[in-house]
Image (cartoon, rainbow, N blue to C red; front, side, top):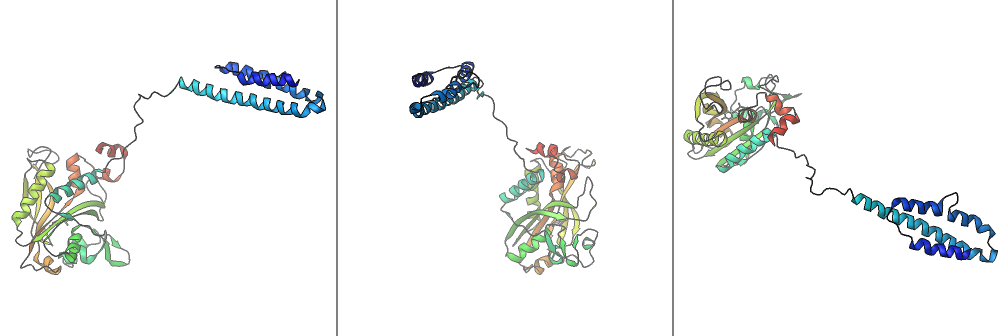
Length: 337
Ligand code: DAH
């Protein structure tokens, strides 16, 4: 019996197959509970003479291990071979990762910042939670000016002096606090107004403020700077016009229109058949604003301007409802990839 077991060791060792079905027959032949060679040998164990038991037991155990190893290794190599028949097609295009895209407001802001940086303007920013001084008083707003009204401004409860800035002009004041002329800076940022939300207005929106203070800065510099800006942003054929206006912090003040970028000035629905679109407010910095902020208005003059980014984005991208910029609707945002 010992000899038979030793022969079987050799037989198992040399067993080879490249078919899973043959391997299964091999398994049944040795390990089957009924009539399997190993099962039978183990049950014969009790009949073995006691002096042979030790050796026979060792041979039987190695035979059992060998059979199990053989099955495991052959099985895994056959399975790998099998899967090679279905190996992945490496010529297929890869899985596409969904890339994010910049928000249209960021795109327009970046473009405006880029245009002014070519003219030597640096970026400055200020806090969104501001005080009355920086938003109104230092900008020459009279005590009773309607913009201070509770209807427009979000005040912080129990702190009537603290509010959410209603315009980025407050950053002008912070820059003048910290820098000496020459000053040439633009300030993009979020602003807040207590307005009913509609297709044309929102309680949160974005502005870009510009400020240029130096010796001999004139209205001509303002006009030329804004013309350059408008033509860079809306195309070389763009015309501008300045209409007299009023802001407490500039004198004289103006509003700037550009020739309608959609109809080229011929008149359409967007420009309400005027051929012009208003895009910003501007003017020469009021001497008393300069003085309040520690700049000698006999030596220095300056210009300032401010525009709403949403409005410009609507014109550039043909967006008809301002609320789309705030809703994070992917079908909208994906169009700006
Ligand atoms: N701050 C003004 C607003 O929110 C916009 C503005 C107008 C800014 C004229 C200026 C300016 O700097 O000179 O409506």
